[in-house]
Length: 349
Image (tube, rainbow, N blue to C red; front, top):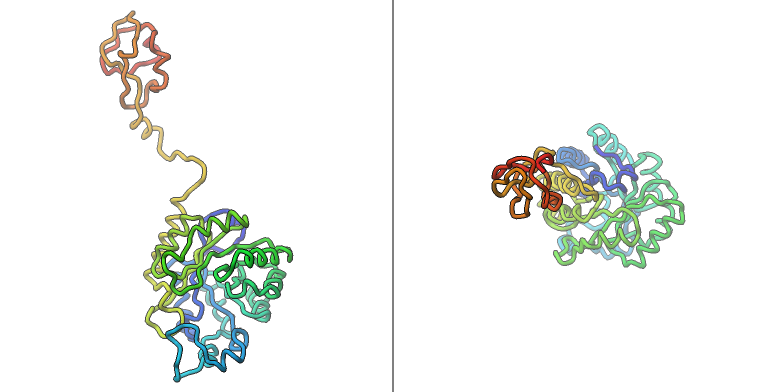
């Protein structure tokens, strides 16, 4: 398991892969623990839940209107929005239980808070590695200020925001003395069209703010996370489910076990393939010499003969004089009979 160490995140080491469980446990701790087990098996570094209650997400008007955000859950008469929010919420005792279970399994634990009380519990009681700020709260300046003072690294999702709002959010966090920020490029559409993903924003955000940038993915499949790694994303966050057809909010746009395994494996491979900015030569001298060329005799050269350019050619292996030194040889006198196709040696002229 890779712990959330900000300096490692910042240094473009192995990407941190977060399985976003959100409410995909459907309020069932047995499902939650199975999600943790499967995420660990797939190779995820962290699982992340969402810390909210029916009192910290919506106000009374939304419950009175009974307005479900996703089309699949509108106009229902078998339950109310308030009932389903309450059912899918995770209590403090359950979060404590899940954190302990993650410690036993060997995978990182975090959660997104939606109130100050939930921030306090995550930091003071559970000592999470980082606080994830949902894109819906990026313009919640008092909340950002409160989180920033808690001394934890902040993963800031910018999905719903303009650059002006991102500027203000980052400035607010910095003014509180917190400079351990990871910006999370995100498109808050479930799922977005390909032309809405805008992975070039990863470069833009990094260049503009000089902070490491990750990617929270809501696309279908696994192509976008791998491409994000190629853009230098230091974190990949992906919704995770046991079954895309399960009843609930985010299952359809989530990765299943097979997809998450591919994401973990291929993102780590992609990161390794990106390697270093510095030119590296990995081939051995033996292999390089086998492919490179040396100066050889293009025909028989008599002892005492003045060597001309047409007397020389370039062939493998590269264990002799490099072709770039041809002008050093041309015009010299041969000290011995040199036969066709022989490697030219320094003592031959």
